[in-house]
Figure 1 (cartoon, rainbow, N blue to C red):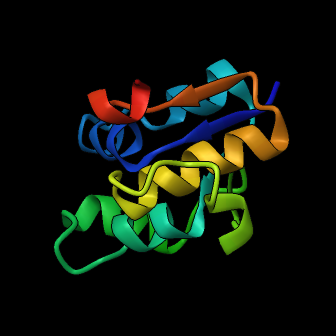
Figure 2: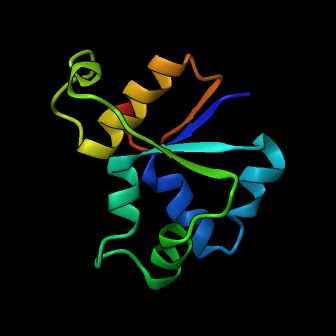
Length: 104
């Protein structure tokens, strides 16, 4: 199963100390580089930064090209855009995203 995550779901699961549920439910989870940057930024909570700065083996970071982003609306934030583009590119089975505009 291919699962791609945006920042929100992972962020909140880390804060709830339940990020391991993703691995239990789905095996590997992929996040794009923009989501990784968001989760490791100084504005992210320390627990989120710590986990994502040294991600567990089941959390993989994948790059998305500018060309792949052309199919995603520009009014979304970079992490959402890259998560959607990555999910499309990989034909993911599941995209974990909490933003209403991104789900639309």
